[in-house]
Length: 216
Image (cartoon, rainbow, N blue to C red):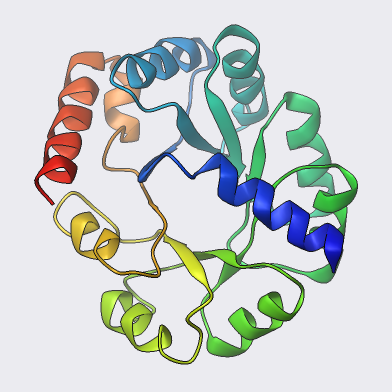
């Protein structure tokens, strides 16, 4: 229990000063550092690189070795994924759900972990293990803001990072919920903008999102 609580606390500390975690798919490794630098120049220093491409781990390594960006590895679904993410230099791991084996592996690897949960039962089970910060995925299909608002009553101690359908039009509404610590989304740096090296548009999207944050 103590180890799991410490791991969850480490994860919470990593995202304590961020409200938006860009979720990024990198198809070409040479885009890794320029993208990270673009985001950091605008004040976003926590990102999630999804392990959906053959070079994803290499991209994580490039960013961690060449920038101070805090990089998480997303879509971790196995112990092997967690091990490879840690070896690549990932600062944290994110998964769509969770298993006891994966939780234990992340603790053993000292890899702060954001497990996914979508039902009250999954949330309660993680809570009994000392995990208080969870990924709520897929957020919109699973009930979105009304669901998170309703779960706040019976489970007030839990905090969430909603992802999946979170976008530039609704992220503020998620962040206005007391049980939402931060949100994750791909609208900041979608794959087409990364592939075409459109760093100016990505910067503009960060500025627009930050302006919305400042207004609310």
